[in-house]
Length: 81
Image (cartoon, rainbow, N blue to C red; front, side, top):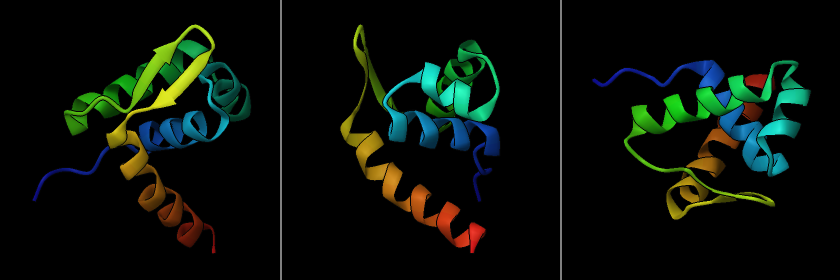
């Protein structure tokens, strides 16, 4: 069984995807933008998949990111319940 991705990296990805910005995700998570960016990069390395296309105007999910997000969002919803 492969190891699970780090929880902070998953939370950083979910917030970034939902908000469309590492900066806004950082504000929500009360960490620096660099920390969020690094956590997402760590998740991408763990999954061996690029999750975002980084653009000047924000972030855009890749196909892999779009397919990963719903399951993650559901898992966080289940944990909150």
